[in-house]
Length: 361
Length: 48
Image (cartoon, rainbow over all chains, first blue to last red; front, side):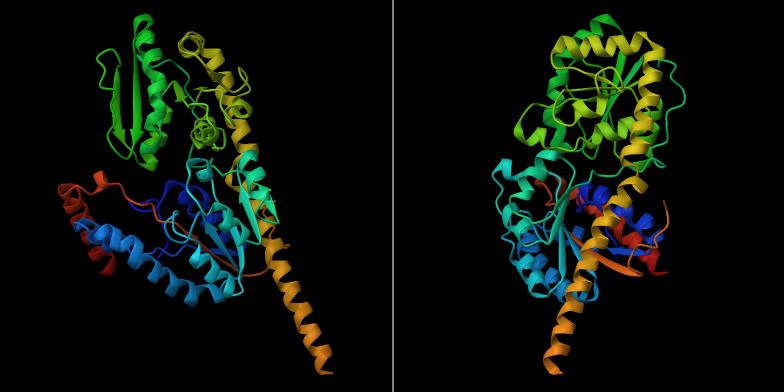
């Protein structure tokens, strides 16, 4: 059973694995992502009080060992995205995978080492190669892994269709789409949104998997449950996408996927000048950067008043997304990495066979 | 661009990923019960 972006799989697995399956298949490469449990069994297990820890810490590793021993020998290469079990577990199964003589490629997208979560360095040291999507993560990974490539997370530009109508909504429509772990960054918008309300009418829509509200009478917000199709519709009907981010070591190492999907959708973006946002937006070219509360209000108001600027940034952002990180562009970079690791494995096996033949003759 | 000639034929990649550790508030009894029923219905349909 293949993973999806359901209840207990992370969105980053969707981004870095699941969404690539059809394109990889079209290139002669079959990517399988075994789920630990069928979803309804996981739900049933986890619905029982006290069973969550037993399931994740007791049952999951046992299932993963069986999957490793059954499936890994048949694969040309095994990719580990973050961890085979929970991310704070010691890399025991990664060591077992190493014993199975498979080539291992590691991928991660968060600077978990900056949050005090251990073992990222050990997991990297067990891999033959790794790919990550932020230069700061590349620097960290190269200390522990012999081969690390900078390959950004792909965005499905066929799914995120470009916005075609840049007429202003009535009132101005702002949007934000993200995971509950990013709610803490929304607080950066609190003061700017209060100020904006005194200048012009607006509505901000937040889309996520669990309900969120600013709970502030001065902020005109609404929440919508996340769905892949609903997110596209939200971006089509919005005027500006917002991407607030605090400035810290963890945030500077993020891939800022939210900014990327806004750009792919041709949506004008206002974002914090943190990490990769600076390069993505090139202030004024594909969006606007806002550091202070007044910057946020000024940038949103400037976009609201100027349709040509909204359209110019939106069109430039879409073109940037298609040429820099659409699925075929990133897919070919990944194929190059996968291919080199597989070929290395083949040539190593050939050399070993030659040495055995020479020894026997 | 779409030519796969350089690539090893029928390459099989296997990917393991950490399951998302659920938060306590994801498992409120009512929420879970309705989701369980929904998933069981889907599973039953898929078996037909």
